[in-house]
Length: 426
Image (cartoon, rainbow, N blue to C red):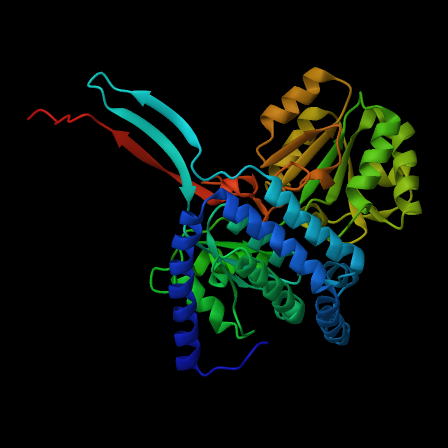
């Protein structure tokens, strides 16, 4: 469980975690894919065996969270149930079934002088992951790092401290069951925010990259203060654009699902755009479906003239609600829709609903986001749904990784050069 440390003690604890993670990463990389797969399956078994203690720990977090008056969406992110815990265990098994990326030959060629050169995938080393109140991230992050032969240091949010600690214990038990070092997955043993500061400094060179997963404030602090590389995950201001050639029933079904399946996730649609040429007929049907599901509507003047809803302010277009609220804008055409997305998108996930192949291809090619979809719910923006087993987050940057960050995205490469005695001419 978490402890309180003075400044000197905390520094010592964090530096020791970094050193142990570095040692564990070397052992994990040398263990081979079969051992890592065995560990992931053992982790799933331990999650199931420890279900009672994990749910008891989560109950403590939920009591504290309700006392803090956390929003319904945050409470939903935090809460575990027997079904959600089983989903976590199945997620671990899914990652175990993903091809081990370490050792993949990405490219190979032979030079005229006979040198044979290969570009080979390998682990990054030690990955620090800082996240907020979703305890399932503990298992997702731990499993993906093991799959990619990286050690990880996890720092969960204070709201999920009991849940995350209990899950980490199960993961470490699984590692030991497979003969791998439990230090390959470590949880920072304190809620002291100064621990994050130590991670951002790199733990004496033992932390190779940091992945922040959370709100804009957390990600902003990490990107501003980190002295090690960051794989950034910003907010999800996601749009669904209903084009004039959309299938009406697809539009109703997709928009409702994209907004209301789970409103508290980053892949939830926050703004719907709809062409004026179809708005009079189709917008009332989409609005009725959303309202029936419990969604509040906020629209521009043209949308308000068609359906009774609140007026959308300028702030609405740049707000990640993470709640049953959607902003609606009637646009003249695809040009205006793309311009709106380009102005307000956070680079996460954007979708178009249309039966017009040319319009779909233009949207897919012109929109600069980590994920762009055609005739599908933005809620599919998820590493598990992409076949990656799980994800640490959706990277919205442009360097190293973009989109769902799975095991493959947590690797780097090196060049292996094989010769037969070649020397370079002077």
